[in-house]
Amino acid sequence: MRIIGMNSGTSVDGIDITLCEFTPADEGTLTMRLLAYQELPYDEALRKRILAICQEQVCHLAELTEINFAIGAAFGKAATSFLEAEHIDPTSIDLIASHGQTLYHLVEPGRTLSTLQLGEPAVIANRTGITVAADFRVADMAAGGQGAPLASFLDALMFKDAAKTRALQNIGGIGNVTFLSVGDDPKSAYAFDTGPGNVLIDYAARHFSQGAARFDRDGAMARKGHIDTALLVEALSHPYFMRHPPKTTGRELFGDAFANMLIVEGTKRGLTPEDIIATLTAITVESIASAYRAFGPARVDEVLVSGGGSHNSFLMESLQAALPETNVMPVDISGLPSEAKEAVTFALLGHETLHGRPANLPRCTGAVQAVVLGKIIPGANYRQLFQHLCNTFSGETRKIQKLKFLRQSG
Image 1 (cartoon, rainbow, N blue to C red):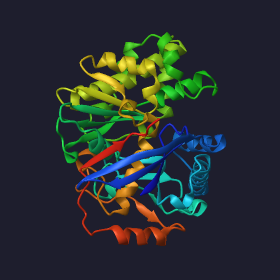
Image 2 (cartoon, rainbow, N blue to C red):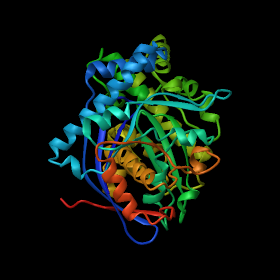
Image 3 (cartoon, one colour):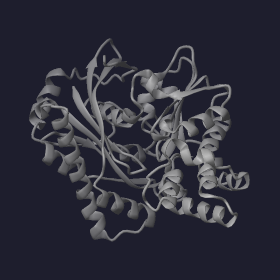
């Protein structure tokens, strides 16, 4: 099956798109080939609307209704542009698996576990003519889980190792980790959100550059600054960091308001912009390292880093220094590009949705049971897709135990 995976993360910096080809191999093994990937930017006006909603956490119902369709149109346009740019025949695609854009993720104690990803999949299906699977988090939350981290499913299938204990650390807007002990089978993995990834750093870069910069490119500003230890300690006293997994977070806790509070406090203390960004980078690094010490395995041999943070050399050097007995490296060494990993994850989840197989790992999300994720929205190819599934589906629902990634040549 040829499946497009689409995702926009907490940083709201663009729409990641991948085309993956999945082929059953030996019993319990699925092979995956990454055929193409791109990151397409949001229209700036739409991006600002999304960020404003996330920052203010208040939205008129008319705006919420409209932006759901506007994001869906942006995803549909991105998919069409991707297919055209890669010279891919749309009729060769079986499914689009879209995560959409997270607007709010509610996991506060005492509240109903719930989440809101927008990007109306019916609009995507209409624009592309391709059946869409979407809304992957809600089934896990309905089963008592946190709806995240869903990437742990791919991590456990693809990266478990017979000789090494690994951590798969994503540093997007928010950081999340999957721990894979030596010889782990997929269901033994465990995962959680470590806290802020790039979200605080990105806000500070926008703030100090008056919007000219979206992020601290390669950690250049942080490298020139000095860490304010007292401010670092204060930030890390946030109750989230002491909470035991499974746990997830987002902009609701570590968004623009939290970043602005730290900037205001740092400015009062006479810190330079470089000092503040260095301190915010240290918050990300130390929140990851302290999470490993508190909740990780006794020893971690390798940390494979994905997300935008993997391209920040200062952040990567700092994380290596914080974990001196562990080899920290970008996930790209596996052949899977860091910037494609999340969209690949949703392509895989869409594949499992079509085959009626559970794709959450309850030990990672906290769900009471494994469940089939996602909702299917028929496109023009739905009857053809359904017939294909009927012709090939054997009726068995045995879980995939291994994902074999076939690297592209060249």
